[in-house]
Image (cartoon, rainbow, N blue to C red):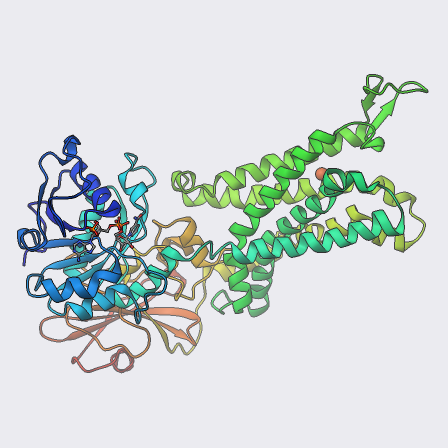
Length: 581
Ligand SMILES: NC(=O)C1=CN([C@@H]2O[C@H](COP(=O)(O)OP(=O)(O)OC[C@H]3O[C@@H](n4cnc5c(N)ncnc54)[C@H](OP(=O)(O)O)[C@@H]3O)[C@@H](O)[C@H]2O)C=CC1
Ligand SMILES: [Fe+3]
């Protein structure tokens, strides 16, 4: 079987939306396509389309025979029927399953594994199901979709990765076919990362609404019911925006405090903090959306009748058009701080766009994230204080202060600003820098983390979440989302977890966690650490043709010590091998 598809020819079974779109994309990138369908004589492929002029449309059987790589662009519902008919013809062919889950059609584990069980002699590869036919057909290959490719056969997987690269996608090695379940789920699950931030925003907004209703309608009557749609609704809106902004930066402060308390960066954060850190991007973007709305509404209402304390009036009887009024220092400073906060927030939002993120190097990205985040918090808190502070001075009782909307809503952001200022004090900063650099821990034991360096370097968002490394303020999984092309080692500071890399000729695959057996030609990297938290050294287990070699590399303080080597045999577990070193 020729896994290197030098002839650039593929077969596509199914001439529906996806099959046609895939064919167009491949033809555009120099591939030849043979179509196979149920009804080769009645299909929707236009003979007038110049792209399809050289395309062969034939019976399913002939199309399968024609090439080694067969894309199966039919619904999972038809898999059984299809497999029964063409099982023999597909023997030893690479069958690429592009299908997504179908409601009410139950398969155990995944469509791809189901197909593999129906076609035991074929090599099933899961790929391209995350791309819609519409995107596939489009001319633009900029910002192309990241495409996970999974298969039990590493050469077949690599062949499809190469094909994906040539067709303008960003494929990555997603490991074994057993990973197809999550690949399929991820491509059909709706807004899974947005649910918690949006629900949190809704809950915070509801709470602030209750507070505003109490303060402005029950405690004192400050507004009429006619103003609830914009003037009053604008209040909980800005209060929610500033709270969410604080919630975006608070977990970073908590993470730093956690590291300071434990005096190490290797202790895993509590699960809730890890999830919170990972959700910061979404929380921040919701805050940005609400802030934008607040700015529009405030601009619409910006006049003396709505904001009397922001304007000076020249005469006894101010004109209705506001012609004899002008903004006082409070109005001008409120607007300035608000707009500067919005500007800093816009920069933050823009750098989350993948194209922009990719154009920044790590230092630039960190600088903008950290500095603009700080500025946004400062300006937003300043905006609330400029509006509220002159009024707070006149309050007689604490109840008045505690029912001041500006005071209550700026409390959390102010707390985050204070925490950040404290954490930037020289002696605390130095401690944090020392901790984040990494340190040696005594008595390292073997961790449960086993991963393959060559795989990790190609992994995409979500798949590296098993790794426990986190840095100061950004959880690794999130950083990997923001920089899908960067390896975890780059994300946490270059060589930290990157050990000796496998030679280019090695065919490697991800081996499951815990007690993995060294496999032929596989490379297995174990992090030596105490309780999976403190990588001190890295162990590469490599099976050569004759024996298994184990190399332990000391990573403490980024120094790579001279490797120790031992030998073992095939049945040895990683732990056993390492214990012999
Ligand atoms: N459309 C999209 O955006 C995406 C689709 N996918 C996946 O791609 C697959 C195809 O989707 P899509 O193209 O939209 O679906 P369509 O219904 O548009 O096309 C399915 C095609 O498969 C053909 N077909 C059905 N059974 C067989 C068979 N036994 N042998 C040969 N051909 C057969 C049908 O032929 P006939 O018309 O004669 O019945 C039809 O042309 C699905 O599994 C879907 O989950 C994945 C990602 C995105
Ligand atoms: Fe405001």
